[in-house]
Image (cartoon, rainbow, N blue to C red; front, side, top):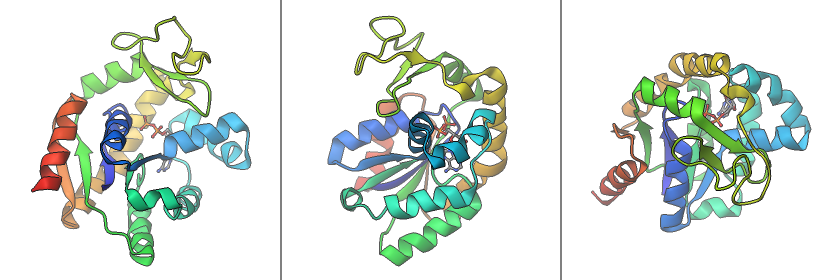
Length: 215
Ligand code: ADP
């Protein structure tokens, strides 16, 4: 599978991507995870990205394209990839198209996971994330809490609220999504690659993707 996952923050792109990796060995590539890992490690990339991220703004396209140009050419991508959180602007989508042509890769589709705004807001304010940059397991205080409060089941590190998951940053992220990322839906529709799924359950999203791939 070579898929792009589109959808607002909290639509479930990461959860769907993780489930899809189990089906056929495709790798999940989350630019948000890569950037948070860089911030946690204190690398140059992390230092450049941190302020944009904490405000809920996008990091500059050049920075993201630099990361993705090399990431997509790593050997594990040959068996398929699920792009989670990239591309996020029209210039990123245009540059991705050129890059994929250059390296001879054809996308299967771009999936827009369309979830109502009230569900998104509820999910983002109750989401918690493992603070270990190499783990970043996701929990939810209501629907999926860690078995020991505040401690990651997988690695034992503290589970925290992301710095961009304050009410102010969430509303900025949703605004940024509407202005910069939502136009990608039209972009991929024109490319003949768009699949829109209106579903709040990740299993239903996976089913719709599989049905489309089989058709
Ligand atoms: P979400 O989809 O829940 O908002 P992500 O983990 O995908 O969160 O991204 C977190 C932050 O990382 C974004 O708000 C943005 O600052 C930055 N980011 C991630 N991917 C990109 C991208 N493709 N282009 C620009 N900024 C990005």
